[in-house]
Image (cartoon, rainbow, N blue to C red; front, side, top):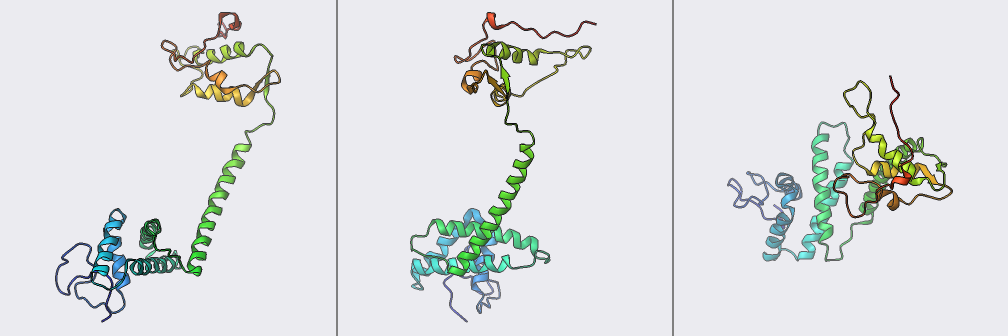
Length: 252
């Protein structure tokens, strides 16, 4: 029977510690790596740091290896098993379990990378494989973002509605009236409603211009407040001289 760096349970007995690895019958052969990860899957990533240090301290204290050697061994085990699972068929009966285990392994790998104080580097083939996987994932995400962008572009325009110079505040006053418009014979139901005042601010700045000039967002934001009874110090109400339009319903 091959010796192992990991702390194992005694055959035909209970575990002395929940991190001890191995099966009750204790026939190890060359499967200690599998037992180490099987126990990790059971314990979960919440305790991965404690689990790793439990076995490392055992290996170092018994003179089996140094911290750096133990780290290298675990990194190689994790890398090998990630690569093995990635090559499994997505149509296999173990696919659901493989996905859970792969997520656990990747989280554990990221933890190991974060504590790498030994200058360890993955073998070139494993590094390339991981990068290829990450690139493929990024390409997929980029394609999804491009699709979303194409959908949004349908609503974009290079032109803006021009507000006659000097009448920006008058236009804002008209916008202020929008939420006050009521639908006749609908018990006072509003025609328009916005979850926040910033909707109106962004609409004005995005689709309108003042004369030939862009509209400053901070200027427009100061013209809106969610609470007119108790506005913020930055709020600037429309002056009476600029209130020159009134939206009224058609008389029956």
